[in-house]
Image (cartoon, rainbow, N blue to C red; front, side, top):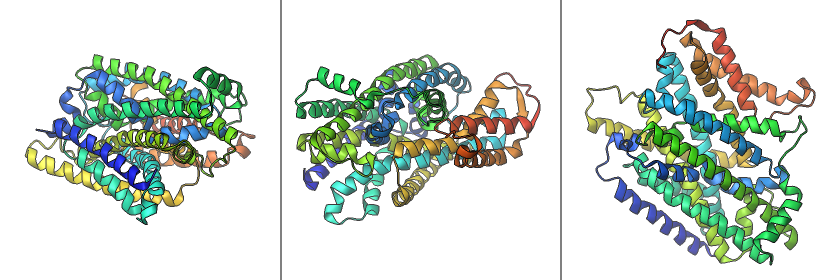
Length: 488
């Protein structure tokens, strides 16, 4: 495929999104931007959330990860199921009962001002880094296969991508994203299925034969029983549960979509339906990864230096133009939902949690809208800078790095919500920011020297649980008398 054809496909796909934006963003208000007027059909949200949760990271990084981690990631996915059950049965009822727009408002009701700001800050930090990781993957592919051929700098490529996202989320917000995610999930799933079909066909096999080859290969190994291995199945199972709780249930981006449903019952139906689809889709992605490795083994193709590049290199350079086009559409479909949702949720959190525009009753609606749009543009610029910085320092699989960062930044949120939900204590609110800063530092030290301190043990994704526990312990140490309220 030539760079021109790839660019035309990208622009055509983007044009579809702008048509949806035009249809959904008319007569938009701050309420429709933040909550979609609480009128989103639950089944549309559930389906669209697949694309948002997968993102370009899962689409590209997980298949490449199969070469070293095999199918062990599936244990993390099974852990997700338990986490999503907690979200549906504990967190969603809380958010709907308190009628929240920003989920971090709960922390102010439960603990106080500094706890509230600490929780919102860690979300903004986590989502900014996570969204940048995800967008980097897509932009880097566009750079390598399109813009490098025209000598266009990476910075300009990122800027184009950010501007497109900014434009189609600028007015409609979550109301637009609910529907664009649906289209993008459809294209992503079609891309996965067609990619597997093209690989199987190029190897002269049928689906049953490929399933047998994958099953009999080392790639299909799912359970690792060595307790010191980062892939130890119990570590991954528990880590998956807590990753789901913090990266979905304590994440404004994902919960904002749930809160746009008409009722708690609809939001719960959305969450449980999404869970079932998500497990199946992740298994398909791992199967695709195994197919890719079997393909390069049969064809004598070298594994790329960065395993994140495995899928694009094979699809674009070795499977023909149709496969390249299918991959590109799937990648864009997986990347856009995480990028647009992140930008909208960051705008929502900062506007409500730090600027308090929902509490400023004397402020005209037009002025609130102007503030929100200014924040939206500011976060687009921040994401642009972080993506460029990330390209300069990236050195390993993005999925691994994403979850490592999540362990440090989402841990304090886990500890705060756990303490609020499972104890009746109040805290010395002014000490909460310090506790939330010290906990990740302790975790970093323990992670770096765990081999020496714990006799060969290496931390994996369970670092998130440890971080949450240390935060919880810090809050317990600075607790006050039993919390008198019962409604939060």
